[in-house]
Length: 110
Image (cartoon, rainbow, N blue to C red; front, top):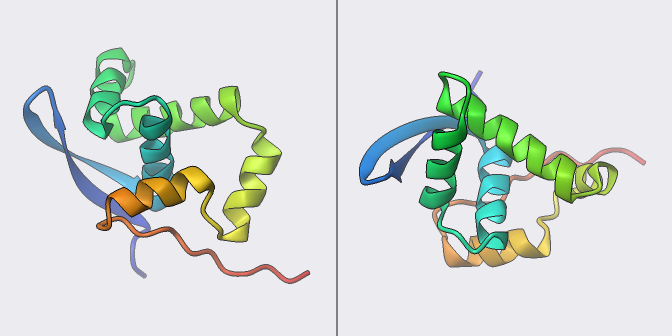
């Protein structure tokens, strides 16, 4: 079975490191950076400085979860994710960087 976790490289304060994240967390992190008008590297650097865990990937997941809880209606957010349709912000972010594709989810029976 193929792992849903993908290893990606990021630059933090001029140093290249890698994080292992599932596509939904990565895509949401990119949306958060876009909305905050920050580069992805800058957001990850801020997470890295503030983290209380040894694992950067886990710290990123907790950051994304916290942002969703604070700034979004979790029910609506989950419904959008389950529909498999990217949000407007996701589409704008994806149009900027063609190397990351939107996550497709299986359709649920009605």
